[in-house]
Image 1: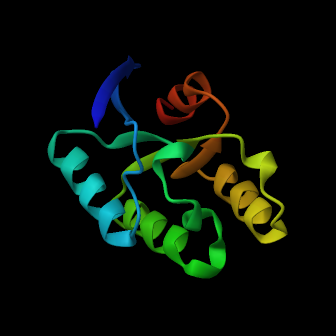
Image 2: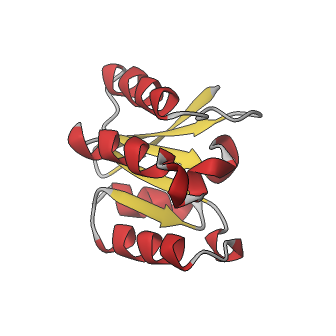
Length: 119
């Protein structure tokens, strides 16, 4: 796992990259969030490829549990990926509603993620 720091408007944003899946379970998501929070990051960028595909099947509950932890601890999160490939209407609705807020965003690029998290 690598952390690339994006500095924008006095905000340090941690972009987490890896060649492997980092979040398999809600506990993995919590541990990653806590590790980054204690390193001083309140804004985090994750890539879709580093999250288990089950996260994007809302029936598993993984997305809800992971995102609730980020929300509870006020760590803002942007997930980068191509979400149009998912057929689930409930997932599309979930992404749409998440993107209306400031806490969690599903975006197509690092640039958009940095822009969302630096405001």
